[in-house]
Length: 359
Image 1 (cartoon, helix red, strand yellow):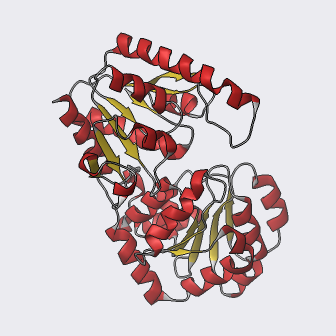
Image 2 (cartoon, one colour; image 1 turned 180 degrees about the vertical axis):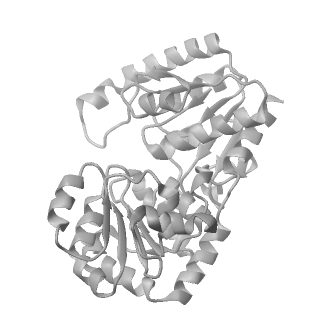
Image 3 (cartoon, one colour; image 1 turned 180 degrees about the horizontal axis):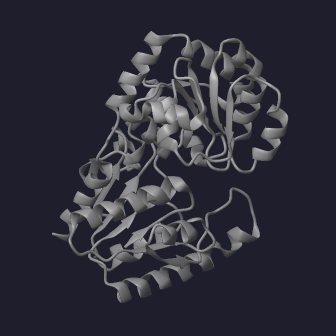
């Protein structure tokens, strides 16, 4: 059983682990457990897996009706978790973070079923910290996680990402053709996530004329929520701008990119590591415990990326991007160092740890 979700940063690693287990084992049954009403209830079946939903949600930082309901949701979810465990009889239960993994992993440890959790970020999530003493194995993306978890349980595996995004020079010309770009000129790739990021969008919008002056081409994923607005406001401004609500062919986008501007979610960073792209990270301030800043700082400390804070982005992000685009030596250094942090076989390594628990 694999549990967790709430965001793509939890769901897609979970699906990658499931796929790795299917490759590794001739016969394996997998059941996902998520939180009712969350995106995993759609994304997991789309990937071809069954999922059960628990009535569970997070705790808000203020008094709300939802907080008052939390004890009832927790008890309900634990009771259903025991029922699911009895019915499915898993050999191992895996938690990837998110609300649903708490009740299920708790119930599994109480029943003596082998358990494994995966932490994607440099800062441990609340659910995983709570489960750490109870589970058998803890797979982490970064070194130095002993400050959150028992050292003897830790295995550094990195974060699973889709291998299709890995660069391939044979498809470089096809990638530029796909976006209608000139391969002799620099390309800035801007990724604000599938929903988009207001700060990134406003910063890029304000810098379109500056990018045009230095002949920088843009591939700009502004997010579905902002697409119509950005399309209207960007019309007639700047030079070559490929504006997308969501980029399906991310492998082509990375292939074209000279420099990437991105949020600092765990999944985004794992993709940057695998592609070895020089990046400027703008951590989202709207995440638990400001964990994206902690993620970004781990790369900055290794000279593997640059960082601009969300509050400074409007004033300095465009200038920082142009400066990096003009500095090939800096690009090469960042690319070399971020590539060293890649874990290409993360999903397989985690699947191996799952199999060890079965054995």
